[in-house]
Image (cartoon, rainbow over all chains, first blue to last red; front, side):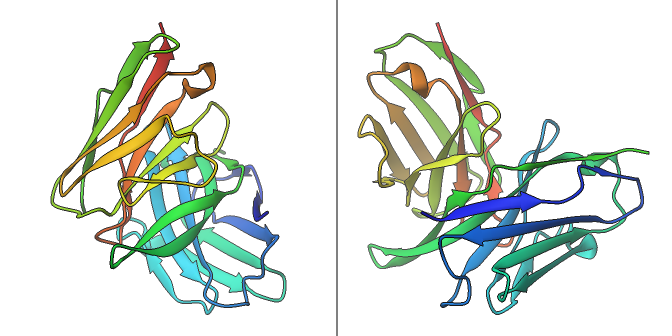
Length: 126
Length: 108
């Protein structure tokens, strides 16, 4: 059974950088193409997709956050990382990592988020 | 960005009832539509993908339908564990992937 676990500081000061790690267990992220997305949830924005990275390090970011987001992968540790710079109170949220699964359905390649971490609450406050 | 609009935002129903939640996309997304259930304090859980395919392990009382811009999640014979918040999500045009605002299902 695949499990994802987020880890990182729960409190970040305004203007600083938020850093989170997602550790994958039960599957090897280096065994082929593995896609991992970061998603956050706040009362104000609901569920917001931050971006994705694959096991080779190719990234796609949400244009609304792209200037502040960096994602990376460490296949030796089976881990993905998220960095969000210049944070403000608006970045306070529960941050999830989720694996993105691709499957062919009726000739279309579709994706879904099949496994999620439990979520990590990050509060931006001085 | 493709906007996903769910209705209603909340509804109440009794155990054993049948309910429907709709999700409308701001443009056609074919069948690139997923549904998730989220219980308080938990991560979302995948219920249905590609608009109508039941994820493994999900009870058959959950059904999805629709294509293009209009989609429906129907829950039959509501059980106590079904009272949660439901979200739709499109993966047709990315980035970005976008979610609906959620529909909260409460016990009447």
